[in-house]
Length: 123
Image 1 (cartoon, rainbow, N blue to C red):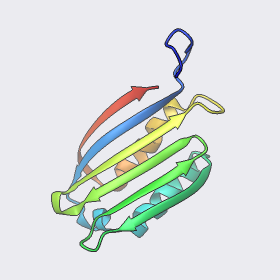
Image 2 (spheres, rainbow, N blue to C red):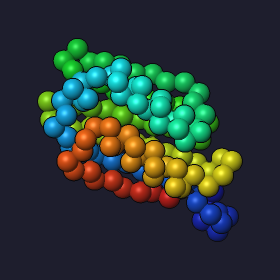
Image 3 (cartoon, one colour):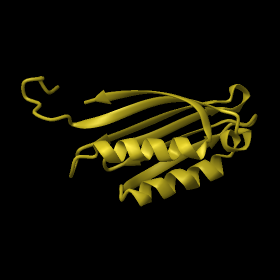
């Protein structure tokens, strides 16, 4: 554990979000979300190590992408018009604060949100 006195700058930014949407097809389509997340990761020159997604039989899905810089995780509940999105980027090779915010925004936008609640945690 790093003591607060040892940490000059934040090690990274962790954004935890709850998103409401009426876009049922996007909440149900693991394939399209996987493609969008992969596109966003490439767009911001992040390095993907691997991913795992699971499509639930009744429509929702869950997924996690491991990055050199940390991770992206998503969980959807179409029956509630709801998803959670977790984006954590450490400052491994550069300050990724703006990139973390942009990645969260781009993925959120894909779901046509009507409400976004997010918590930003500096680590």
